[in-house]
Length: 173
Image (cartoon, rainbow, N blue to C red):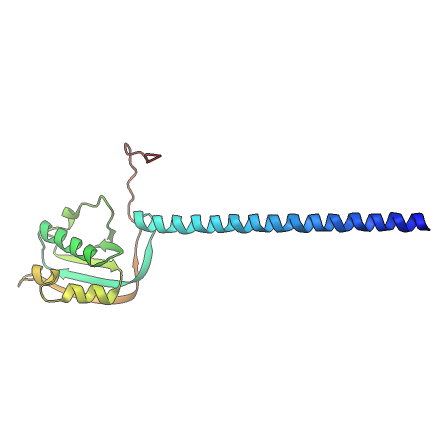
């Protein structure tokens, strides 16, 4: 009987150690899993953010729709777009075309109507655009009129993202 009790005691101690080891391993694996999940979530968030920045993803949010009736010359279009960006626009589209880094703004000169969708703080954008001496005041004349509509749910499509043939990422700088 003493031998049996000794064997059972040793067996129970071994099982307790094994349970403790497995519990510790589970804790390690859980922490690794959470770390990988956190890294994966950060990667996905960064990828989404960069997709919006480079124009490869459609996006939506609050903003304004600016409609210009009348033909603007190309320099006026450039001034208008730059002023909108300086006010704090996040994303822009002109006549349904997402503006990207290499968008030729000349294509929007001498067009009879421009619809410019702008994502950003709608109240700030509208008030800055309409202020006396602001960009709309500067481009307005008898042949050009503008209207602004605020929106809480404005959508801007993805753009035609360029594939660079010669530009390469420089590592280590």
